[in-house]
Image (cartoon, rainbow, N blue to C red):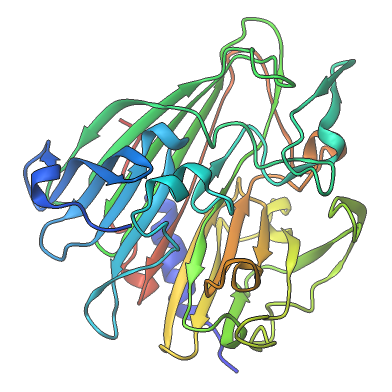
Length: 386
């Protein structure tokens, strides 16, 4: 069994709070900043077309984050320095430079999920006395899933590099015309690459002068591992977690929870290489609901027991839930564990658990990210919204 070093974790969290495909050739890139960290414009080209990228690059180590503005602001790649091999490696699953696969994105790899994350039962909810019907894009279970942003084109409103970090901010404004979401919500997504870390800051604003709107969000990264069955996932020990029980057919929460037996004991996921133990479960971070808790942020550790390397996914107090999914090996043959930070529970438009109600002109902001190696070195630089 493997246990997260709690002293390192606490140091990492204090720093976190302070912070609030195939590689294109150089001929395909255009740099827009000077300093160690730069932002480059590039494309991913192939038979499926050409997809523009914003690439945040550490020119010293060649660490990078690839963002796709025309594909919902998706995080296509996070490449960080391995503390073991001292080489840059892919931390999350990519589409291996295939534009057709990027556009299809059957598994929602790296997708930003908003104005809702995970599932809405029957694609239907009632808000302020009105019933709304979302598009059913999980027909096998009859649900709406993973929000409305994932196939939108976002605007680049800011980018900069320098000696400490590279930063890109994208914007999207929902104008009320999306079926099932008649609300004017604007979002700013600020992507940041620092030394050995990726951070995403989010700001959401209700642009309506009078009416409230419902909102919650998440992210869908697949953390690469050598073998899913041999990976260990551990929740940070400063908080207890509840396992959110769901209907086995629809995977919609039943309203009941239990103390989790998963991801707290250092055991591997189990199963075989082609069929790891199947998990598609949600968990509530109890410290996020406790005003007396010292857990101002939480961490999920994904430990690759073969490579003997850890990935730390962190989220602040606004992200009160985590979804874990181990099905990529069975579905696509890719060895990975999806750990999805969410700001509310699955089906929050109906059960209201963790749901954010933004009043007229109200703003909401939060952040999450990924780091490798020693958590004490993560996010040492405060990075505000531009």
